Length: 595
Ligand code: ATP
Image 1 (cartoon, rainbow, N blue to C red):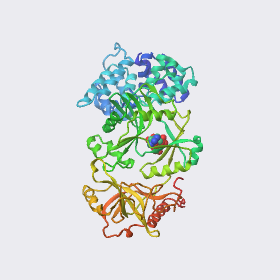
Image 2 (image 1 turned 135 degrees about the horizontal axis):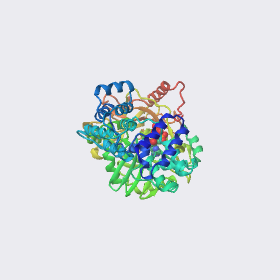
Image 3 (image 1 turned 45 degrees about the horizontal axis):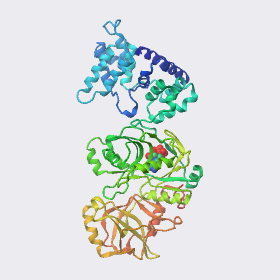
Image 4 (image 1 turned 45 degrees about the vertical axis):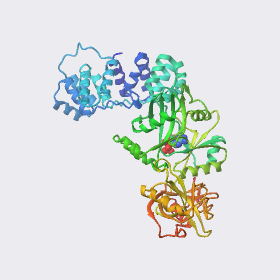
């Protein structure tokens, strides 16, 4: 196919603004395009040469493109600059300059679409030292063989400024008309697109195999599936009603969504926006190789930053350290991650997207070998709103954002690329920040793992309830301890070790080691939340719930000057919680966390 023919269509498309007319022109173009190159025509029309997830861009700056125009046209730099100032569009500059060029172009061979495409591909792939020069050389060679109008579009494509106003969705409309017999087939085409994120590939399958090919469209490892998204509601009752009475509720981890593609030892990671982020997570690649027991798989997980000392989850912002290009290996050590798998979309040749969630989850369970850093998302199956709410508060306390509640039953397929009511998220509508430090009493400890084996991994901390004269737990703290602290603590606490929970301690947590309440430490956290596990201010805000400190850290101050009864009281914690809420909401919500 001659490139000039394609350019003829571009000229006509550029001249119109209506979507229907545009679709009609696209229909005509696709009909006249040979099936073998339809993918290339589609990419070029969108101003690309590959689908975006490949992550290979032409990346030619205007300045560089103008140099190529100079070489191809023989015009002076001054003249080119003047035209660029006047027109502001490299494409138009190229068109004008090439129309003025001195060499005879009459007997020049005409460019084909393949010629243009393969030259652009070479430009995109040129990398490393001297690559800018290579790009200019290839581009000027291409322009030298181009007619002025062809040059206009070549230049717009290489500089990333095609802007014909055509989106993937318009192309899907046109494909459905040409190869599906009309708009009725549109959903099938859209599904194919959602399963591959590759509009060029969908066009090729349609052109070569017709509607049948689209109906049988297959998932390909390496082509990302557009993610299923959740709706949002604000109470467990509403969610259960909407979802049909029974659900699986999962922790909503606060990290980065990943779609993992595995074929043998080859692993690719795509972000929620379907960018290839494999290079940022070499550790996740390794974890996948070790823990995913399938030859081929497409899975989804949430990747969460964790405290390297305690394994506790950290807020999402901590993942930002992974965005840097250099020293990624240092970042891996300083900012390790855990992955929590929640979906299996494709496993060993089987497309699971149309299977119900129960089957997908079972498949996931059968191929993931859980370990310290790789787990399935924590989940419960329930019909009880109270149970959902309790699970929600547990999730918040552990550092999650809330829950994603998912429908069960045979309708509960994976709806690629859609936001719908099969998944509903339950998040908090506000956050109460903790301003002050508190002084808490050590009442228990948990064995350390990894670097902390042999010492404590975390301590169970309690506030003092004056009225009852007891110590009620408010958090498990593992962060903020130096190596020195970790050495010192077992020694310091040894004299207070007891074989069971102290009679004056109230908690819903099972510690590995118990202590007589004696040692007071200063703690700071991000906020105070309500908790089904911790016992401070029990049932004062909400029946069956206490208060807890989220993301607690040791400040480094041992309060040897304080007796356990001088520790922060549960009334103070309650007051802090109320004050924070008042600051954030004009009318205190009476403890109703989920609003
Ligand atoms: P948000 O900002 O709330 O994450 P979003 O638009 O990115 O919104 P939604 O579909 O609304 O995404 O919410 C689901 C998101 O929650 C997923 O994109 C995923 O990143 C994250 N997530 C965490 N845990 C889970 C889980 N167990 N199941 C599904 N999604 C989860």
